[in-house]
Image (cartoon, rainbow, N blue to C red; front, side):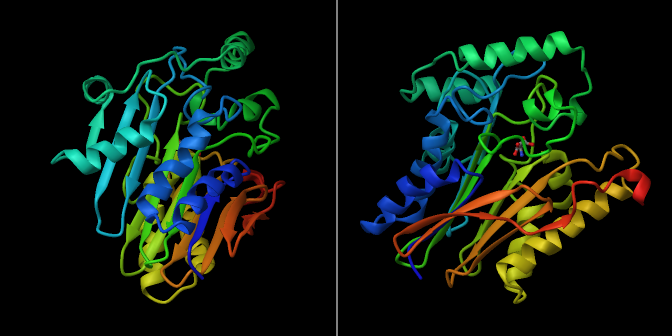
Length: 317
Ligand code: ASP
């Protein structure tokens, strides 16, 4: 079934539309994966991506993004400020440099040299949320997944569906898979903190012979497990995309338990995967994760299956 595109969260629906349109007209999955997630980057209502994304603890909006195609070509940017579309900067690195990852000021300078226009990414709303967070007195960044996570006192680990990283995997008519991932990261993070999204193998991974995967949620947990790489390798061994995502979620949770540093189990990580045959799936640590799939002219939002229910807390172990 080609083309097909899968992406994370409700805002994946609009992103999918842009990506599907490109591939329907014969465009490739790399263009689709770039242009699709730009829709979320441009949308100020999406509070975890691009323009309007929530800032770090110092009030600075720092963005991470990466893109990978079926030929194992990679571009990634880390902790870049004042550039609205980091995914296109990542694409430029993929196309025009001998490198794979540019960070911070270097990434910004490269963007400006190549015609990107600088801009303030903070909106009235994100500034208001930041000021509320400052006033709340909460300081532990590792306990924060999104703004709502903080404000609702950990009850809603997924926020309200308008939040969180967008990860996308696209399969074009020629059977080529590409993936993209773009985020402003965990809200109120320490300045300089980088999550899973721009890390190849964690936030996303593609193998042209197999398929691709992408992640969302608390990046620290995904990095530990190299989640997206693990999923692609599981699919290579014959697992369905959903089962491969389940293996990665189980690994993420196991490593969280093992780690003495971070024994907070109230976190969310969700994965999406799509293989070369057009089979797709998702799985998350907890309930509430949603993913969007556009195939055969139809764009649908699904609830992901998950490992443990909302009430599961450390005392239950
Ligand atoms: N994965 C992102 C990060 O940790 C955040 C998210 O998906 O909400 O930076």
